[in-house]
Image (cartoon, rainbow, N blue to C red; front, side):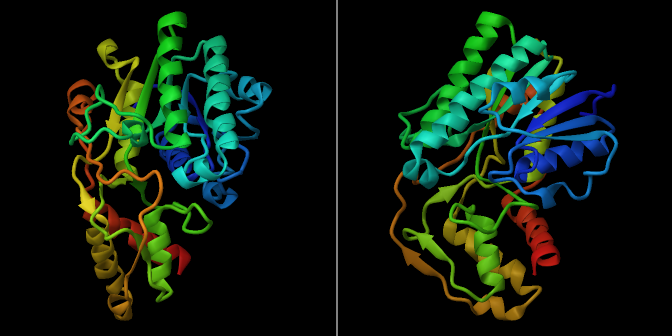
Length: 327
């Protein structure tokens, strides 16, 4: 759904993977975009294509600093809050920093948004909130106990958003992202996501290491599906659709073995030798859930969500982007 008027949209974490894709999308749609980022995990090169756009404004700041949040929301219509410290292993290694950013920073942004009377606050929630709940597919109203400090912080975000909606009248929508992947996702670093990490290893003829036997499954979600959900959450005129949580996924699951098979197949179209790279299996990772699959019925019914990209369709796009930009 296109927005008819020009709005000013704040995207926190706008130099990150998801944030920079959102910045690019809304700029192309003719809107003004403010990006707040401290570049802890985001990258300046993610902004290079639009940094000179007169409708784009970069604020180098930290959501843990309330003054930066107040500055960022000035004159803003909508907030798309993507800023967070991701990664379950990172949160296990450093729970204090994860909590400071994901909880205290989130509360700062909610408070600043409330005070600025923004129209709606859309935020990145997480499928990790489902914790030890074993039922599949995951339905928004049924969660388990969190399995990591990261999962706790993302659940606390949902609780705070609900309280701000009920107590202050701030419209909020949380999007529980399921294993998002696509262009601009960082392949380097200790906490790199599995898809870009495996892509870079395969392009260098290095053997990817799968945690466990490869039969854990995920609802891998291409970035363009996520952009669609953010736009629908922001623009929906259905008052029954706000102040709630939505799964943001494709609604299908694939094992890690499936994933690596697809990656080798699509990369081998650029370099046939990649098909022969061996896969290594290691120990299961602490805090990982065995299987993840989202029900997207609520998003379809209330927001009109219609994801266009399956894992295979998204991987073809992503692999082409990595090959052309990082090889």
